[in-house]
Length: 446
Image (tube, rainbow, N blue to C red):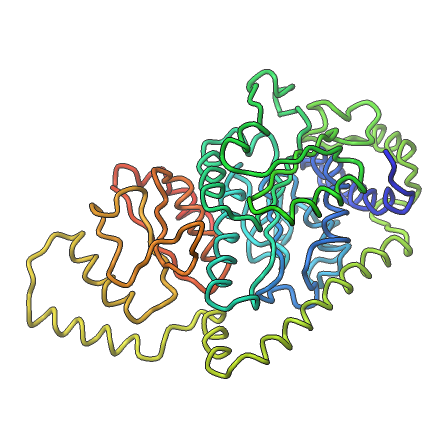
C-alpha cells in the first residue's frame, strides 16, 4: 500500500471515531467503517461536491450508504467534514435513546443523510432513483443540474433481490453518473461469503450493462484513479474495492467477529498500536481535523459558483426551478381540480376504479408537470400512462413515464429515491397481489 502518512491518518480518524463510539455504546458495526475508511476518505476529500454549511443545495453530489449498518462511517464523515448538526457530543451518544445518530442512518436526522438505509439493497435502489432524478432535471434545465450519485454497498446488499432489479434498471437506462463502491471483504455475519454465495459480481454488473473496475480498497491513489476513470464512462460504474473488514484490528480484522460487535478494550489498544493512532478516545488531532475541514470548505466553492449560474437563468425559468425545489404545486392546481370534480358530479360516469384513476391522472398530469409516472409492466392494465406522458429512455430523459419492467421491489425504492431527490412527484402502478413486494420501500422507508 502506498498511502502517505497523512492519508492514513485521515482514514484513521474515521476508523477510531467509529471504534470509540461503538465501544462506548457497546453496540454497533465497526467492521465496515474500519474497512471502508480509505474509500470514504478519497471520496470526501477529493471528489464529492457538497457543502457542509448548506448541505441541501440541489446540485450537490449524493452519497448513499446502502450498507446502513455501518452508520458510524457516515456520521464520522459528517463530523469531520464540518456538518454543523453532527457534533462530537453526538458521536459520543451513538445509539443512545434520543440520539440523532442511530444504528442505521435515518433521513431527517442529520443533513448529510440522503435516505434511510438498513434493509440491505434499499439504498442502492434509492440511489438509482436519485441518479434518475439528476438526468431528468438535466434534461429540463441543462447543466444547472449536473452531478454524481455515489453509493457504498456490501456483499449483503448485492445478495438481496432488490439489488438485481436496481442494477439491471440502471444499466438499461445507462445512468452513467451513478458510481457504486462495492466493499468486497468476503465476510458476512455467519462467516465467509463462500458459505452462501459464489456470484462473480463483476461479471454480473458487466452483464447488466455496467462499466466495472477492480481496485485495492486500501490504496488511496488507486481509488482516486478508479473514480476518475468511472467519471469518463457512458455507463454506470461498479468499483470493486477489495478490502479487509475491520482493517487494522490485529486479531479480529478480516473475520466475522468484527462485523457487528464492539472490538473490546484489549483489541482497541492493539489496533491503536498497529495503526499508529495515539490520541485518546474521541480526539482527532488538530492537523488531521483541519485537513478534513479544509476539504469540506474546498468542495463548497462549487456551490457558490452554481448559485451564480442559477441567478443567471431567465427569471421565469429560475422561478420554475425554485418552485420545483420547494415542492410547491402550481397556483392553479386547486381550481383545475375543483372544475374536474364539478364535471364528475354532472357526468356521473360509471367506470372501473382503474379507469377512474386514469381520468384523474389525466387532469393532474396536465397541470402538474413534475409528476413522473410508471408501472411494473402493467401500463395498459393499471392505466397509469396519460396523454401527456412520453416514455423515459436511455437516449431521452425528457419524458415523464418510466417503464420499470417486472421490478416491483425496485419500483418502490426508485420512487422513494426520486421523491427524496426533489423536484418530482413519482407515482407507480401494479396489481394488488404484487403490491406487497414494494410495501417496504414505498411505505416503511422515506
